[in-house]
Length: 89
Image (cartoon, rainbow, N blue to C red; front, side, top):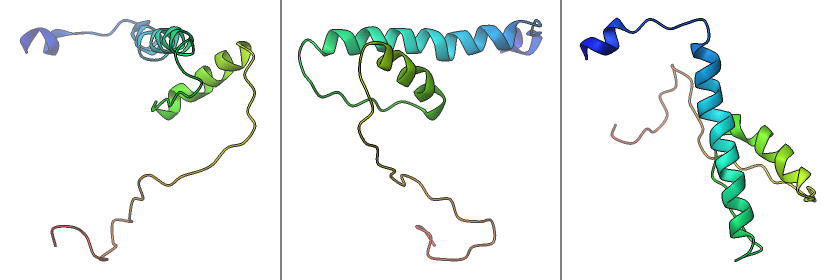
């Protein structure tokens, strides 16, 4: 823990973190998609919103096109003052 407290980010820390968390993970995912397409025509990608733009662009480079989309509400956050039924109350 003491080592973490001593950590002092460099001017490039944000760029390195962004590269690791988005670019490298997206590149790995795209490799997985290509290998899985040999096994199935249907693939579900439960990935975070920050990743989707880059993944979408790269998938389109492979020749895929968006035909339709659907929006789903997964989580709805209530305002701080909301007193509606909340689990546990």
